[in-house]
Length: 485
Ligand code: FRU
Image (cartoon, rainbow, N blue to C red; front, top):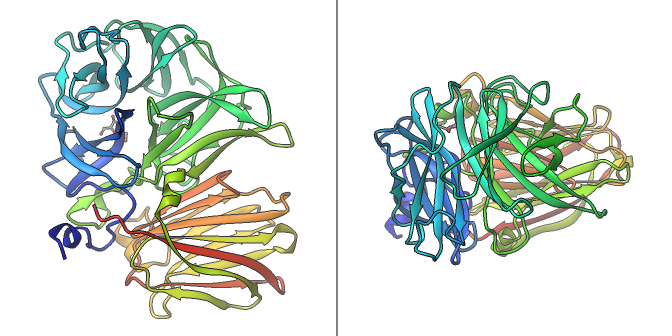
């Protein structure tokens, strides 16, 4: 066994989700594709397993799942810590940093505690070394306490760089021609969306709407408290952006939640993708308990990369879909179940000793459904978690409350529920299970439910029970190749 393998064999160490080798991590930052590599930077505290003076950690990958760890990209300086932000490729040297060629520019928040301003840095060697711009900060603090997390992109229609920034409980938009001088254009958020806490880590991008000839803009905004499952989580708005202003076209009364589980925060999409996909990933934790999750010697993982798309339903409503990025399919190793199970009373569906992460799909006719419960990791001596489908309530609930290890913190043992479309002919649920987490995609990603789980022992069994006579469930499962490092 190589040292890398023993290092990556700790309890709850995911195999296909990104984790730092050791110490504390939070938000994904600076996600950009450049010269054949995906870059993932992240909020990192190299001197402890809890949040502390923030650096940007760094990893690169060619496929978004096998990550190579690189040295820390940026350390705190005289302007403060290096908080969250984004990165872009300056293809046409608008900054003048690249002698007429191109390179990477990172845009981040310099945080001297609550005094937060926006700064930039550039790299001429594919992100290996970074130079902070001598004119920092490029946006000084205007007297707003929470003023952070710049996400920047090139807006072709107005030929400007756009910055989306979280400011208190609102979003502020800025624009620039050279990434150094910024002009404020508008703000968004008053009386819209969820306001249980400060707004953080926004993202904004345009997507075509499948089944129509429209294109729409998606504004993603994280809210530090009071999200769908309690604590921190993401919401989104769908509308138009003209280079200056975002107009929400979704009904104001309903908050649109990105994910209904407890552990999907600060999602950020890759800039400069090599194809037309929009792919994001998020920090798989929750500020309620992030500092205490019992893993060692690291703390926190990222979600799988997810392709985000829009589609128009038969009801004319535009929906956001999230699917595991197609690269994840390339990890499929072997099929371990492909059968139709008749469920009535409690029935064991399968038991496996997973040495690698896997994906399980259940498909059933919505008409035949009333209430079904699947229990995972339930060994008879230890309590597992449950997935309960309740048609009357129109909800799918993931419950990790009874697992013993959940009780390290009062907010962890939670039941989290996502709505599902009971009018559809079939209900399809895909669960991707890695060590330490379950990501659930309902009806091809119309809703997702992402939760950390801390099972005792590694055996994974599933039994199902339907309270409505016989229920036919198509079960398909395959294991993934385990990626150790
Ligand atoms: C979100 C966040 C950001 C901030 C960073 C600090 O999780 O609070 O708003 O930039 O974490 O680590």
